Image 1 (cartoon, rainbow, N blue to C red):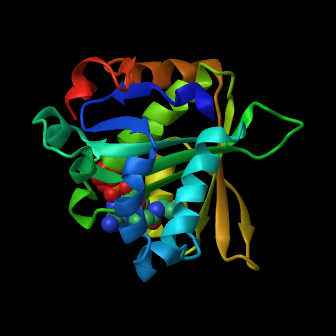
Image 2 (cartoon, protein in one colour):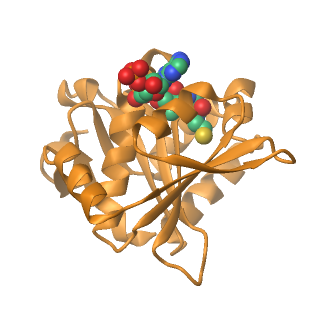
Image 3 (cartoon, rainbow, N blue to C red):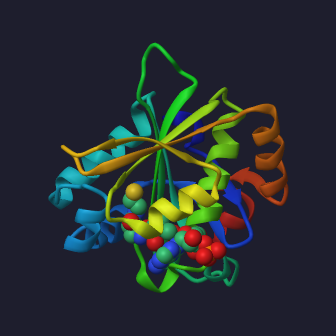
Length: 204
Ligand SMILES: CC(C)(COP(=O)(O)OP(=O)(O)OC[C@H]1O[C@@H](n2cnc3c(N)ncnc32)[C@H](O)[C@@H]1OP(=O)(O)O)[C@@H](O)C(=O)NCCC(=O)NCCS
């Protein structure tokens, strides 16, 4: 979606920025990993297909995506920005009849960035951002064997609602009640929203 095309969200551990064509080569390199293809249930794409995918992520109204940057590297002004990339976080509006429901996906592709709270903060920041746009129910579909991801979503208050033996995946869900909304606001009260290509990010 174009709504976030000039939005930068600055957190403690991660910075979320829109997925631009400059990020595509590194993203494409990541997705050559068979482990990541398996864990994210993704098909390998050619570089050209990856560029088309990036455009559709930007243009389609039912998809919101951010690239996850390592905040420490980003604050240190490591250049180019691609060298700060850690992963991505995505949201799909899956039900045209219910615009308050979103499916969330996260990938911390850089192995050295895992287990440091990046995935947790990226999901919290995405949920907080889209809650302000009217999202109130989140789902995550995760491979049955992906214990780290299942545990992370459970720690983020998601509960298992379904298991598909066909797809070998579990569905976890979080409904944002008033109590959950307050919790989400507290967890993300430090997050600053900035313009992506202005100010601090302009030097990258
Ligand atoms: C799963 C993933 C998103 C987690 O992100 P992360 O930044 O590494 O996780 P965090 O540091 O935020 O950890 C949050 C919680 O997740 C769980 N967790 C994370 N890594 C774990 C591991 N290797 N083993 C078991 N639990 C793990 C823990 O409960 C952890 O909480 P704790 O640190 O208090 O114990 C990330 O490792 C990843 O992207 N892996 C590869 C791709 C993938 O599986 N994507 C998800 C597809 S649905």
